[in-house]
Image (tube, rainbow, N blue to C red; front, side, top):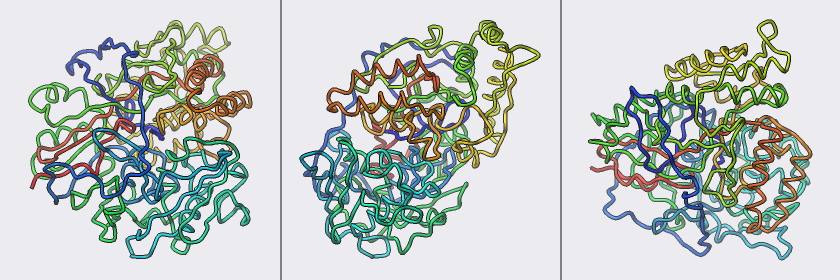
Length: 586
């Protein structure tokens, strides 16, 4: 699900995929394990509209302990309105409840009511959804959650200053959403969402949106009382409705969560609260964190890292430390993002030919436990997936062809006296990112490009790369995409429709083309069950006609954890551990 955007960390990113494939030793090149992508199971996520709280208990689980989670990426903020990254979605899932939620029941990830009594009642024409809040739900300060709070939060997600990185479904689907600017700058008479009394929320749509119950699981649907909104400072302590609340938050460094005594498990079918709290540490080199966790001395025995396993540690997790590693399906596709406004199509093709994918993977310490080579924007498990080769037959592997790329550039009028300039940000305070950048820069320069690599602190890179008018032309956010639910209607509309750019958000290629918008609208008008094959055709057409980004691998979810950490389960729709299932041996 993605949403979500993939987080750039060194070679690829801080999210992974899954499926047990062999991996090379650290001294070997990153060999590609042959794998038939057509055998990957199609992803589904059923709905259980009648399920009630509390969440099913985990057999043998013990209460107590603090789970420490060190990893390299640094969240820009924790404002619920602005979230669309997998790590912050996972973290806020501990503190914030939405209208719906994913729950792990009987070995399956399913959609269930969370704050709402059901998954929404839809009108006969499909253009109005009605949600009713459960009784007895309060914030961490004891104040009751009201329909007005949910409506305010949804309106707030339209504010370009407060929700720069937010999803764009509400802007596209909510009635009048394309011109609404939020509660502080927008039309006060806007009726796209409306509260009826203290419990009822109405959402009016411009067009049918059968996937709305899935979207309602996002933190944009988490209530915010308007009287307590501190705008840009709300990120410092957003009011909790889940089993945990903010104890302390140091932006760029760490977040500590503690129990929320106002949370009522009887109303929550999706969450358990076995650990006493969480300690998230940002900016920690993943290989260092993973190495320490596998050794499990002191606090490392109660720690977890959710980034792709470093290739130098594969021998351990395939051997004596096998019990401390979990991998499983994920929803993410990694891409090389290229700004179509600044890089012509034929130059983008030359970049695809020149790019050293395998060398970058090796420099970044990636192993095939964390990825599967690929070339499509849609991952194989999504209905309608259509396989096709990349530029010049690219299959997701290889180290680039500098000579061929130079020839392609020469045919376009570029050469030693007039090189095409590529520019991007990288994390200057990460040893892994420095290694990756050295390889990337050398290979691209060998292909005839001029490279301007802009080293910035890791804690600043996500925000800089997510700025649409940043003075760079490649490697902006997102570095990939994780479907928001297992359908391509949660991939292409947010990633290549004009809505994202109009909202000031980055997207694949920062592209805005009416022809793309028209094709998306045509497919969206089809019944959801008929959309799959059409999205597959659209995927191939988009790649061949526009190439806004270069897909090169599908992710797997990885987690490395200490010897006292128990019941680490991979969420197949996010490629992340289900944090509320975890308990610590006392």
